[in-house]
Length: 126
Image 1: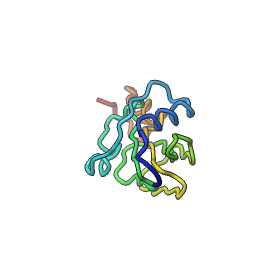
Image 2 (image 1 turned 90 degrees about the vertical axis):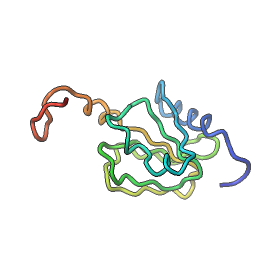
Image 3 (image 1 turned 120 degrees about the vertical axis):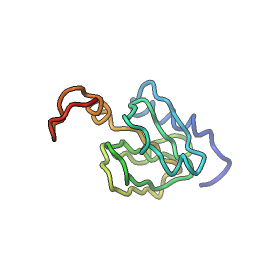
Image 4 (image 1 turned 180 degrees about the vertical axis):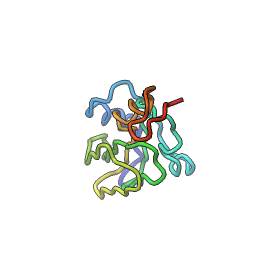
């Protein structure tokens, strides 16, 4: 991570616009606890929430209850690598990245809030 500290909210917003993510709420994870928990505690998933992890080149999806879209960006907000619909238990790395964005995969966020019976077990969402 070279040079002065960039405006991560701005860089994340540039990347979100590039990807066509409309009306997002960007949260920059600057504190240890925010970086540790990431998106794992956001249940049900919020399709508008985007977490930005500055000075980061790798993330994991351990403990996730839904798939994520993971985007590696540079300091200017250019997308370096895009990983869609990443399931739990994965580790992703990109040596060319300066930060990582995470959001709930849209299909996951939509189906998580579905009120019909579950496709797997048949129970109804509460």
